[in-house]
Length: 160
Image (cartoon, rainbow, N blue to C red; front, top):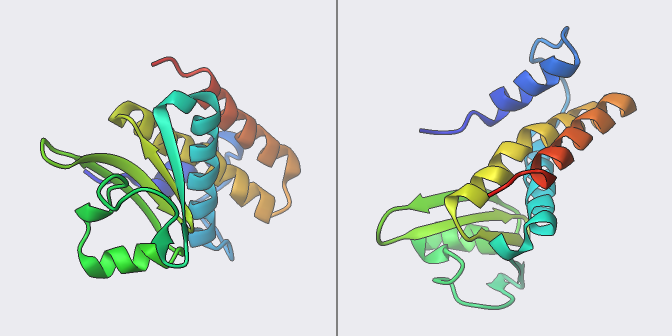
């Protein structure tokens, strides 16, 4: 079952702006997605640091650790190469008995989550930060603050 990222953001935007019909106009949706995941992962890392490990990519390689530790071994070599170039967004939930990893590769940053619950917390937070990014792009500062505050509250007050 895949996650309808844009649908979740659209639904949240509509709670703030009831006239929004899903027209993102000139909004760069890739930048929106990267911002949403980056902000949400960083917030989970701040609020629930024991549940998240971070790493970076530099010079087409992991700064520390092995491909296996960070879940890169779950991907075919061509996709590993693409991820290690540092410009991709790959949220990955590998949840089977032999390959269990919950990781987000976002540009040169990597967030690895201890369990599916903490990964889902970051995933579910993206709708708020994606909405904040959208409102920022159209110059709606108050609505941007409202969406950002909602994301912060959601993650900060989450109890495992």
